[in-house]
Length: 263
Image 1 (tube, rainbow, N blue to C red):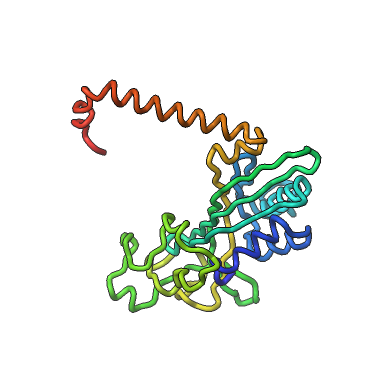
Image 2: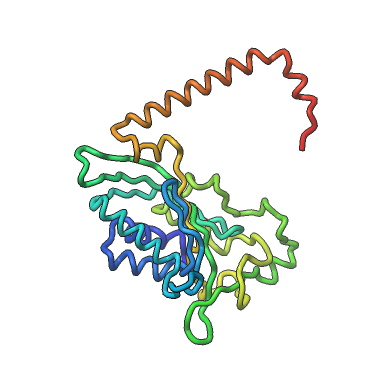
């Protein structure tokens, strides 16, 4: 992907609702061979071809493909919506706010309507001498460096943070921050050749995917029909009541805690 904010949507759609061929193509073209995956119910660690004895052909991307294929077999008709995408150029992380309706075909009336935020770690690549993609390091242009931009500056103009994940919608292209509008640091994580920020030859591959669910969301998968969500919501309200009661009871001793040294 040379523009992750706008190009992530078809990648997600191919993985979640596409055919086996579309799933394989989306992973091959947009994920590194050692991409990892973290989900409340499964995990794929980083490993590449040759890392596992006797299985030199195996890499973590293949396991990820198997997970997505089984995902489609369990729920042939998945409804997926993407509400917003935000790219944090300082950390090369893409945040995708989405929802999905997951139905298991052999369980009557089963439906899990869940919301999640997907955190994608992006690895910058460029075209090598042999025409293949190689990891690279992104550097700011010389004018940004002269103006005193450094790695410790965390409040630069135009920088996108995680808090903006609900602010920008992928359909409002004029509102999405431009790559060239920020200068997060002198260089970003990578290896190999050094490439100037904004270079048209930069490609971003996904090196890690983490699907983040609130407990009352992922519990819908295992305790459906609204039962799990309702039980957890009740527990949250009980927990809130306990906090209020204990804070009130121990209010006379609040000054003791105020005197504690801050870290």
